[in-house]
Image 1 (tube, helix red, strand yellow):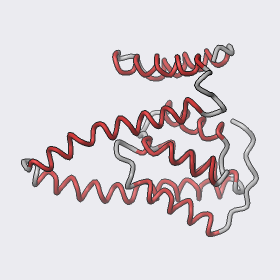
Image 2: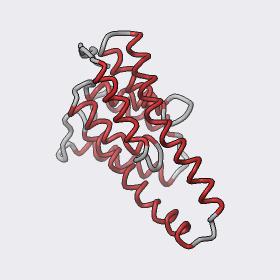
Image 3: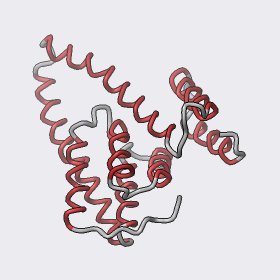
Length: 194
């Protein structure tokens, strides 16, 4: 990862971080990873609290680690906090980002699942469940696009896109563990092939 950015955070900045994750929580249909494009837009492009390298490394490390998919949010918060001052602010970043992303979606999921289970035979409930699948796929594709096009990659950077498409097809059609594919991508990057 690159050197941390030196930031001076006010109470308003911490509240903005928390509020952004609160709003993203209600949009995270299919998991928190589907909101990664907006996290990138907010944290990297708009606020400049993270670099592209820090953002991508946070997601890659969290996805490679065992545990829940939402761990990348904690790493993003940690890196924002580190950039804002050090270990204690890093822990504050973790706390605010995780609470922000988890509280609304957890409450909504609990209430909606109880209601949906009670009304599972209604045509509208079945249609809603079927209609959500394409939205989740589109959000995951947007996440892949953001991650693949970071660091200045363009449509002319065909090796990156070839690896991205090949990885997606392998994940979709085989039972190859994702860590093997991450390792293969790391080796390709190490040797300068992508």
